[in-house]
Amino acid sequence: MRALSAGDRAEIDDLLAAYVLSLDVDDIDTAVNLFVENGEFHTYGRAFVGRDRLRRMFEGAPKGLHLAGRSLIAPSPEGATVRQQLVFYPADGSAHRLAIYDDDIVRVGERWLFRSRQCRFMTEDGTLHSRP
Image (cartoon, rainbow, N blue to C red; front, side, top):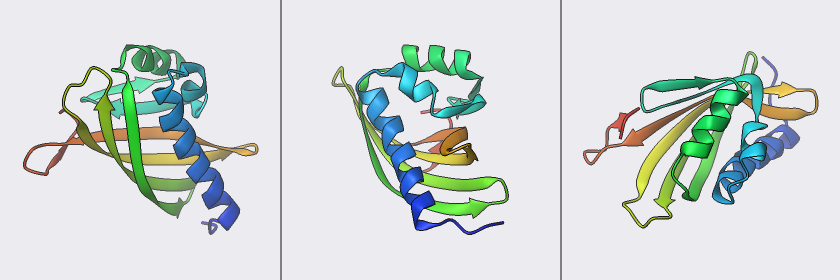
C-alpha cells in the first residue's frame, strides 16, 4: 500500500468538492462522471450500480445544498478510503438531513474517481442508518 502524497490529497479534496457542487447546481453529467464506469452508490438500503443507474438516482434526488465537512482520507490497497460529514438542506425548505459518507476511491489514469459511496443518515438519537 503506497502512501498518499499531498498532491493526491488535494486531488481527492477536489473530487469531493466537485461532487457536492455539481449536485447543488444540478450538473448531473459531472456528478455521474466522478464515478468509475461500474461505480456504486449505497443509500436508503439500496445500491445504484453503473452510470445509468447513478444518473437516474441523481435526477430523482431532492434538490438542495450539500455542505460537506472536512474529510478523513486514508490509503487503501487499491486507492484510498474517505469518510466525510454532510448536512443537506433541501431546496423545498423541509428539514435538513445529517449524513456520513464512506467512500472507496481509485485512481483511473490521471483522475481519482469514486468506486463506491455509502451514505448513512443520522437519526434523532445520533445513530447512523442507511434509511432516514
